[in-house]
Image 1 (cartoon, rainbow, N blue to C red):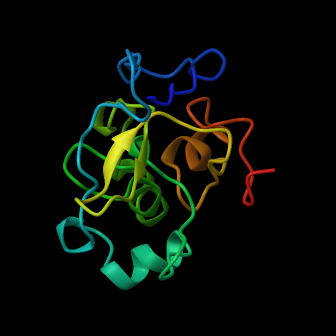
Image 2 (tube, rainbow, N blue to C red):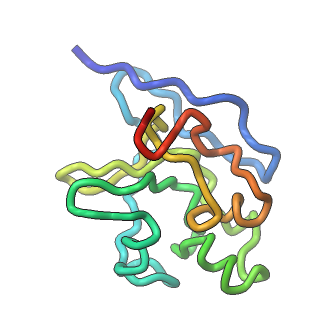
Length: 144
């Protein structure tokens, strides 16, 4: 039968008005279903830089959260580090989902307990505020 998706974790942040990914009705990973930006679509990092930021290899990659990008397809933490005035909370994607790989392309789904937590190299909110309330607090690099 179908696999039920996990529920969202804890309360959300106190930053701008973020929306939650739609609550799943039946199947796992409904999220907002947006496609992950391709390396060549990102305006401020190369594909090689993106792979380095997320430790992307042939088989695995650190968690890529939807909220780690701006609406105009910039990697927000990288933009913030280069110029803190170049990114605002209003520029950010407002989904708390995670991009998952599939043979049909990566798309946004609900968080899982095995997702990594955010850090200042990947997350604008962590870089700016020292924390991210959108990240999976139960996550760890190895899903423990």
